[in-house]
Image (cartoon, rainbow, N blue to C red; front, side, top):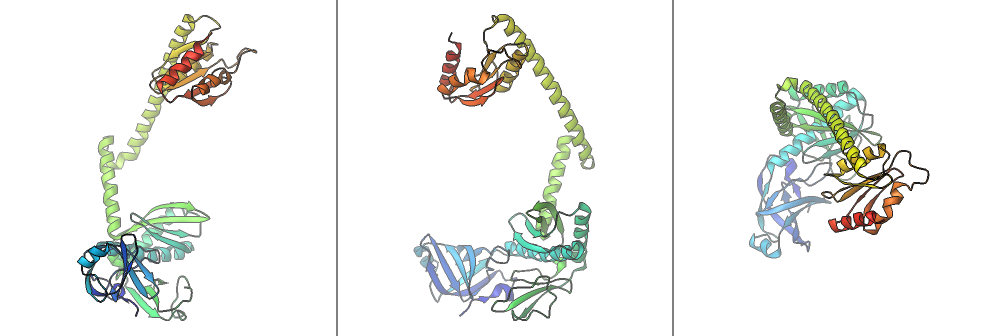
Length: 400
């Protein structure tokens, strides 16, 4: 006996009683329950399964197994018995209707979107994904221009506003020729479900849908990006689209308050802020270079000619700037940042013919103390695991 699929016959039903046909122990704290009838939609056709409870036990997944529908519940044998779940018993099923409605809205919107994209852009839908936050379709063309995306959105919203009826037709799988299907189904067994949006769209589909296009209310394409040899189109519809609008409106308000500018002027304010940041970054870099130059001059004067200049710095960035400034003065130097356990070393851009490259000068000593790093002829850097290793390296470098 196959499971009676009440999610098709009574899609708005939130609670129903069903009889347990089989209870299979998964051996992992889960049982797979087969009922004589079910209001739970199983995963399939790009649509996630319904969730809810059976006899108060949480339903983790719903899977179609041939003509049966299996409901995986999180339960032990004892909790199953305590809930009264046994073969032949009647159990109360409760579906998460809000989740079901969301999935129905996104799935119906996908039919509309795919139909409009085929009609306006000549692109075929290759696959459909319905996720927790967004839905997407993959189509067989390069990403369209923004104007084309806007035209698609406008047409979908026109159909939503005109409130076309969504009707399901049942026919044998080998005889779908009476419907102008957007995509021909593979011939299988059982009854074929053809979902029609009042003469505009016909698709063979086993998912759940709203009763009319007007029930969607809102629709928006959120992003289009290149994907493999075609592109992926992300969208939201129905209550999910309103939630997305509310999220974006909140972000706009927060950004407006942070920028001290009206929402309509945010682009101008952001450009002005970026310009100020770039100017500030340049000024800061110039100031750092000037300070490094002053410190390098002082160290150069305090260190005898021909000797390596040793210095300490607040951070690795400062250490790097200092050794480069000393290199411009013709000095070989090593600067350490104890706070970050890092060192930087530098030598003049055109070292003496007999001078050893700076990576060969300090690299072996760093490696001997567990330092990790590298460099080239005029710059070297290394990081150490702890302060003891860094101190040992610096002591080694100072040996005559």
